[in-house]
Length: 384
Image (cartoon, rainbow, N blue to C red; front, side, top):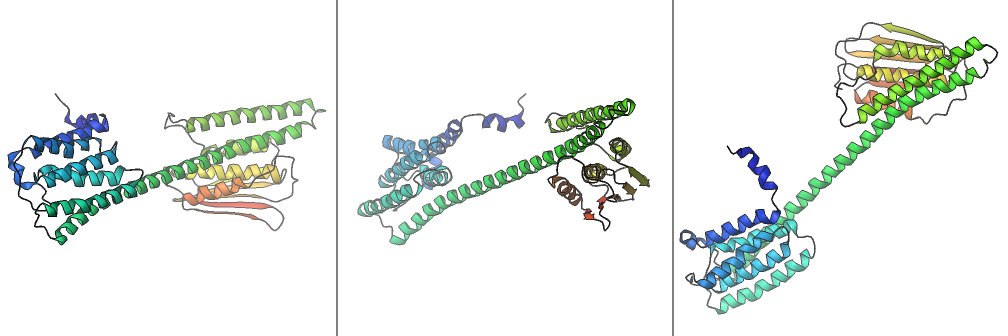
């Protein structure tokens, strides 16, 4: 059986000229039917002349060019206008006259170049047509000719409006696509920053410390093992990130959550940072993106502690509420800055954007004693 739901899709696969040919042939065939003989366009009100062989040629000249109304709109409009003029001058008054407003609308939509020139030319041609009809004995008054001309202008204007509406829609779609790409680039940069910066900073700090442990082989081996473990975790996190960027990735790819904070804190401790970790409450069953954002807040804060306050006592507090997760990470400023790579400020800005996107609050301020504290209130249950 024929699946009629597929007909529109199959029809759209045909060339645009083939599709427009159906309209041209239908209008031409309709113009030859006796039932529509008295429904044709009459400009000038000359006595209607019976159809003959010449009428068939006039109808063909009026209607068939509609087959190229989208591919060659200027050619279509000029031929249809010529056919319409002959139709009125020879007084056939066929239904094929309907092709003229259709051609005008199509030209208004699809004509790319010389739009004004063509319109001025056709408007100028209208004047000798009205003069020829008047000399042929037409009883039409001036207001009738003016009204018909305004109707043609309205048809062209409708096509021009459709063209501008389509252009505005295309521009809006382009703007949305560009904004989406920019947001995606920002997200990718943010994820790379969070993953790479944290692990690389930890590795740099661990490697710097290992330089001074050559006299203690057992401690040197522990330090180098920590560097190796950090590198492996970095590779694992990067692979997970690349899986997320892959359009064909499994939607169940697991993102870091607050359940992995203990591992994160332990990794930071192994890099030489004294960290006190406190959790209050239990995560809600459905927290959406809140757990992921909370993890990133702690991760970035610990990264900054390693870079700018290495050796300072660092406190991490995470409290789970019914509808919110509260995070606070602070250093007392007693340590010394290491030789880790300098920051760009992108990390804290990215955290603020993440928290703001969920409708939360984020602050990052220096403390009176020289330390630094990061606080975040993250609404839970937000969609991922």
